[in-house]
Image (tube, rainbow, N blue to C red):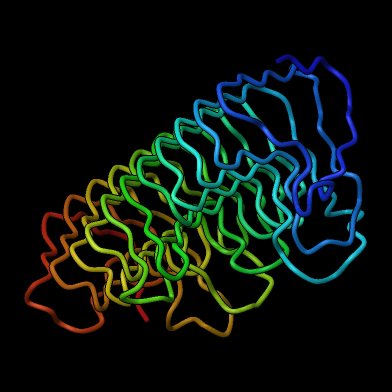
Length: 323
């Protein structure tokens, strides 16, 4: 199915909280100048495009444009551009999503084998993408930027809901920049009832995140909590505000290797805890090795409490500050 160039107004709440439903065994192609634009609404929930309980779906090109500048309500944070729920073998290539009331992309409800390639999430209100329930997902060569408006304000957030899991997720070759709440976060407040395994964050550019979050305070460019065995490898983590990489709250067996961490800035009023390159706390069995940590306003690598199960070795530190 081809949608040619042009702007098409979509009632994103036409089917409860969904606009256009994309069914199984379908390739939806949007012209490079095709825009699906949400008609302004007052709903806390909407989805411009919805892939729900579908198999073998491909979406290529085009732009989804949310209603955040003209939204008619003030509550909620779940107005999505593309929502993939309970679906298998979904490929999204070259799609841009802007200005949604909630997230640009959302993946949940036990979806499997999802691939996002060359996509862009820009100036969405809550997240660039939320990943809550999936087994087998790749996000590559994509951009998540300018997320701001309501917490968490992340570029990418892997956060299973109660009783859900996010397994076998790889994020690689992506750019995460200017997100108010930080670039990448994984974790869950539902300790013991939600978790993730085999999560890889590799060869990404993380820059300029953490400035002016909606709830104030300070943020982490890369924040790992409540997950086991996450790999944070070979990333460029540059000029972020708050903390660059943080392992805490049961971030067990995390591997932080081969990253360049540079130029992290302090937050006025929170100088003691900010400007830090890599902060380590409550992450038993983790390894921090082979990283280059330079020119951060605060400490380069700071282990808050000694832990004999944590290995810190072969890192290069220079030009960092202190608390």
